[in-house]
Length: 67
Image (cartoon, rainbow, N blue to C red; front, side, top):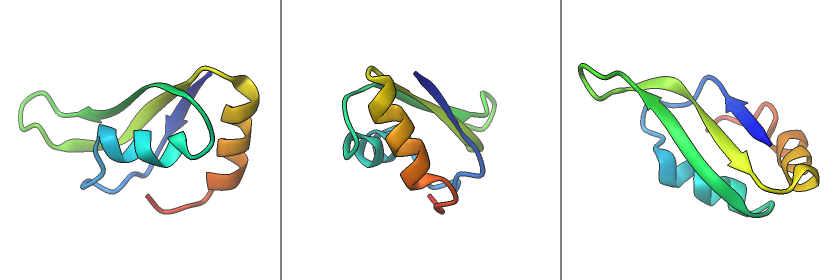
């Protein structure tokens, strides 16, 4: 399941997202979107989790959390 994450802190990186979501299950990939010109985070990203039930649990538990 592909999970969109918005309003991320500009200091969050791919590894931070992976670590956070691995608490709920297996993570295929994590990606913070960065500006191609200055390399700075755009404040959003994606996490892909293999198991849909684990992904739904992560979404419900982390919804509204400041990351």
